[in-house]
Image (cartoon, rainbow over all chains, first blue to last red; front, top):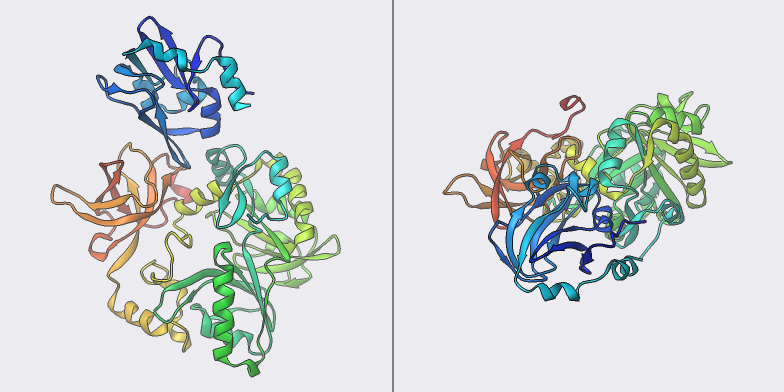
Length: 126
Length: 381
C-alpha cells in the first residue's frame, strides 16, 4: 500500500506538491516511484525556467524506460534538488523528503485548488 | 494476446506484465535491477515458453538443416546443440536459433517467439525445394511445449536438487551438473520427458528446460521453492534484455533482421563457409573476404548520462560530427552502473576505442566503442 500524506496535493500524473505561501515544492509520489522501479537517472528543469501547469519539465529513467514528469502548477523554477541528479535512488528511498525535484514560485496559486486531495489521489491509484 | 502455460504463476507472483511480440509476458516481478543482479550473483528463473519449438526427423534431416542454416550441423553428436542462423539468399537473417540433435535422426530448433510464423513458412518452402522424397518431417511443436531458463552461478546446485540421477537420453551423464556447455540430455520428471540443455541468454552458467506444456508449472514452482535458499528470483523479460545486452547477444528485431547479415552482426563464427552449399552462402563468403560496409559495435557511455535507448542517433565525435547510425539496443547496465548499448555504424567508426556520441533528447553525450562483451565476469568485483 502506497504512502499518500494527507498534507499534500496531487496531480493525476503522480506528482505531489507541498505549498507554502507563494512557493511550492514538487516531487513524485510513492506510488509513482514504486511503479517506475529503481531510478538510475533524473533530469531536472533549469533554475529560472518558466513552466506552465501540465508541462513536461523533468525526466526520470529506470533501467527499463524514460518517463516525463509534469509540473502540477505554473510558475518559475527557483531551486532544483541536485542531490537526486547525483543519487537518483533518493527518489525511491524518500519520495516526499530528500527525493523532492524542484521548487517553484507559483504564477497562479489558485491552480492548487484544481489538484487532487490525498483522498482523491488514493482513490485514483486504487 | 497469447499467454504461456506459466501465466497463472506470473500473476500469483505479482508480475508486471507487458506485450512482447504478441505475448503477455512478465517484464519484472520486483525490479529489473534486482532480478538482473540476482542472476549475476545467484540465480534467476525465466519463463521462455513463448519461444518456438520446431522438430525435424528423418534420414535427411541433418542434410536439410545444413543447407538451410549457417552453422555446420555435421558437427552435432547426439545430445549436442549449437547456435546458428537462418538466412535468406541475400544473406539477411530470417532468425537466429539453437539447433539440438536429440536422436540420430531427430533435431529440435528453438526459435524466437516473434519469428515462429515466418520461420515455419520459410522452412516449409525450403523443404519443398529440397525435395519431399528425401524424407524430412517438420513439426511445429511450439504449442506443445513450455520452457524455462534457470541462469546464474547457483543454477547447477539448484537444478541438481530437482533432477536427481542421470539422463535417460541425449548426452548421457550421471548427474545434470555434468552436462557441458551446449550439451542436452533427457530426464524423466513425473513420468514425462524433460530436455535440459546447458545454455542461456545471460552470459552466466545456466540451463534451459523444455517440457510438455502441462508439466512446466510444476517445474517452475519446484525450482522457485528449491532456489529460495540459494537466492533465486523469478526474472522477467526486462532483466533478460539487460543481461543479454551486457554480454552483447543479439536480439532479433534489434540487432538482426532480414536485411542484416551475420557478418555485419559480428556472428561470422557461426557461419560455416567450408561446409558446402547453404542458403545465403555466396554473399556471406564475399563479405567474409571483402569485409562489410557496416558493423555492429558495442559502446559504453564515457561519463554520467541518461541511458541510451533504441533508435537514439549515433554521431561521430567532434564539431564536424555527423549522424552515423542508430542505437539498436541500449540501457543502463545494472552490473556496471553506466549506459551501454549496441548499434550499427559504418566500418570506419567501428574500431574499438573510437569516440562517438549518442543523441539523447537533443543533446549529445560521449561514448566509446568497446570490445564485446561489454561485461565480463572479471570486469567487476
